[in-house]
Amino acid sequence: MRSRLPIALVLTATVAVLAAGGVVAQIEGGDRGVAAVDSSNDFEVSGIRVDAAGTNPDAARLAGWREAQRKAYAQLSQRMGGASASVSDGTLDSIVSSIVVENEQIGPHRYLARLGVLFDRARTAGLLGVSAAVSRSSPFVVVPVQWSTGVGTAFEQRTQWQEAWARFRTGASAIDYVRPAGTGPDPLLLNVGQTQRPDRGWWRALVDQYGASDVLMPMVRLYRQWPGGPVVGVFEARYGPDHRLLRRFTLRVGGASGIAALLDAGVKRLDEVYQRALREGYLGLDPGLNPIMPVVETPPEEASDLLADEPALSTATMALTIQFDTPDAGAVTGAESVVRGVPGVTGAVTTSLALGGVSSMNVTYAGTPEALRTALEARGWQVIGTGATLRIRRGGPPVATPPIAPRPGTAG
Image (tube, rainbow, N blue to C red; front, side, top):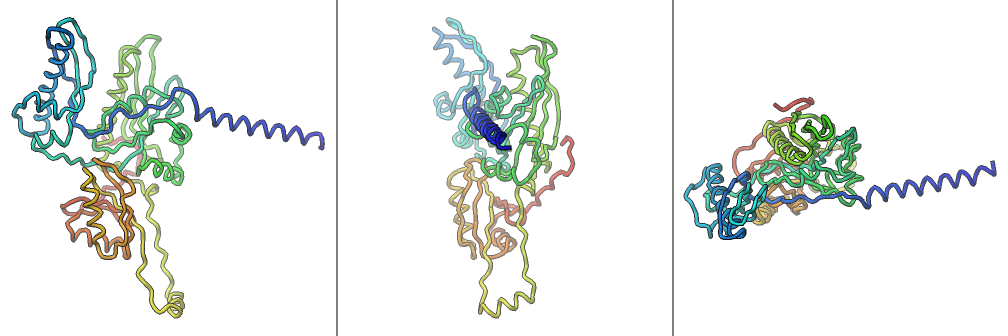
């Protein structure tokens, strides 16, 4: 026995060193991590085709970009139902935030391209006579999972599916996407194995760390029919710790060179599925990730003993979370001042800020959630939800929160 003890110690130390090395290798090095290209709320018009001429390549390109701005503004005006009057190129230059080159061919005197145009939301909305406010869902952390050759990958390595979600512009979507970059601890926390675990406690810690309320798991399975041949992508819109399926569809491309376009189209279709599920009530907040703490009442006989020692008891103070729309910085200060003005509120601090989306405020209140709801409704706010988490909006009668679909399946 004495001779075996050093061997056991050596084996234990070796396993510990290998395990530590495995963790380090899983975090450091490798080609992983891609930040989102654009998370702004700009208006986007894509697929604008131009054919312009000029005295030189630069002049032809500038003429093409100006033509794209005019065509994009006309399409945006028609889409938004705003004023359709044409504007000058100088005005367009002031409201266009960027030009996205989807495809271009440049000649000595000619410019052929397919372009996308992004318009600054605040300036363009005022010009079109429409509202710049954006109604967004609660924040959802996105874990894109790609299956290829039988191997599933989320953030363990950089994938084309992760890149497609990073390229996607979320300005026109009603879903508030939280897109991790895939760096730092992301490969350890958000991996394929985690997407299969329904444990609410661990998921609650994860979504809180990323400033979200729930999780979306868009999935793609890539099949190559033969080397160099067509590629088929099977897309699935999944959500929540239970990995529930909303919808599945298939897209096909002629070769490997078109995989990026295939995935971009898949992302857009999945965003439409998630938006439709939100409208139909399938993406309600999971009670397991947003728990309501139970209220423990003291029995009458114990309460009488306590009252004998204490001459008076103050109203119990509780902590609540209030989610509210923040289209701009003024909405943050305005909502905080209104909540602080409610009698019984001793503190109201915004802890999760998302300009153009939905922010969260921690409120300390001496009273019940029902009393706070009544006070906010009396001040012209629409209040949704019950318990320790409330959702407030300006104006309108209260609307009941749609129930969460208890069954897996398709949303439509």
